[in-house]
Image (spheres, rainbow, N blue to C red):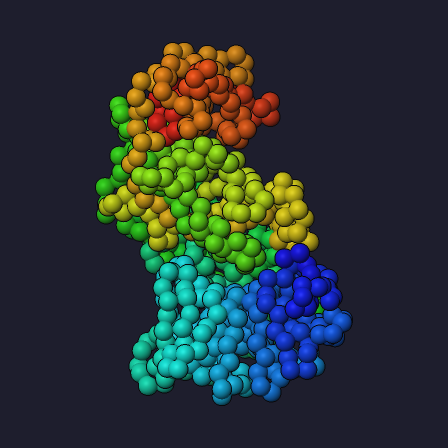
Length: 582
């Protein structure tokens, strides 16, 4: 990942290192003549001289290469790209053929004794290709979200084995698709994409591509529209002209068009919840351009129905001793492809706890922070990088909510998110999962070196934002954090301009183990004051370490309500007290 390929002797001596133009996550493959083949994140497969590291040739794809190359007995190099294509390249660096899917390929291909090539793709399909590039067969492992087959196939005596993002390990017999009528199998020789033309596709929150929208659709879900342009059987690196995008829906609803860096996608975010159990049509049109002066226009009508409201809405009333709370986890961004390649496991391991601290009919404020594993389950993480107030709307069991100031720590540098939106529907058990829509926007200027990298690869949009979409899961939570703490009381809440202070009597309530806060809400609208609460909050302790006071300082560039403001004192996830202040 430091942009270098290294050759190291058996004694640990660096014999040579070669600087490439981007990070390298692939394992190098070595041919019998000593040539080293390795893919990089600059959308290229390299052939390096094994003795000196000199670059012999560079073969370009249209997106970064994550997985490792495989070398066939005849010298053909096979490598997948996150542009969705498997490439067959000659030892001289010329393209022999490509086989296109619609989803990123991070799986390293495996080759059997007959020269057949096996790999998994982001569409949840295991592919088996003949040496001439035609499909022998393919097996669709799952049609649900979270179905990426990013692991590399292992060839057993009777079956191909590989792992799936859905948590399963697959074992597919070599002859299964040839000898059965399993609808998950395909033996069509060609790619499922046409040879020529351009068309928009609907992309689910989990990253599956469809020409028709899978139903039903969550009422607050964002729609992602992807452009796929083909010419002569090849997929072009085509970009939508965002300025020309037109969106109309029936019944009418207002949509925000969120540009995606790279130009292949646009995200359509509804400004209000759609009606329940209703049929909609969504007409999307746009101009597009590609290299070599290619250009055209696309227009597509998507028809879909929204989810019905068949489950009673959850109670968001804050009780005397407990607040409604949730555990939110398994963040799975899929777009753009680089975000998954950077840290798929890191995002999926994030764990958040959140509670309702203020509610009114049809509206609520959710208080969110990081969680960690504890002796009795998930508990609040006092070292959380984020304290976020999210404004939500609730209609039936469907909701949408927005917040700012979320910071993600996944093993690398902290990732500050400027705006974070979730939309889904609770089930009878208070959970939300399938179809949950996540849209996150971050200023590339605030991302440091990561932002520079994203800008270089044209992944920041025209507004200087890095936009990522995906899905996430939630379930009800009940632990010590969302209950009233024993022997803790608020003795005063005061305001001095933009500073708010709460004093507490909290014997035995150790500050080092908890996350006290003051959250501001506009009494006139029920909306929270949006600021980076983690930076704006500070607390003091008594000589014995117990919580003594909480102070919130609102920066000058953050708008406060023109009238009174409601200050809510929160201990971890429980809203302990509140007061309206002038």
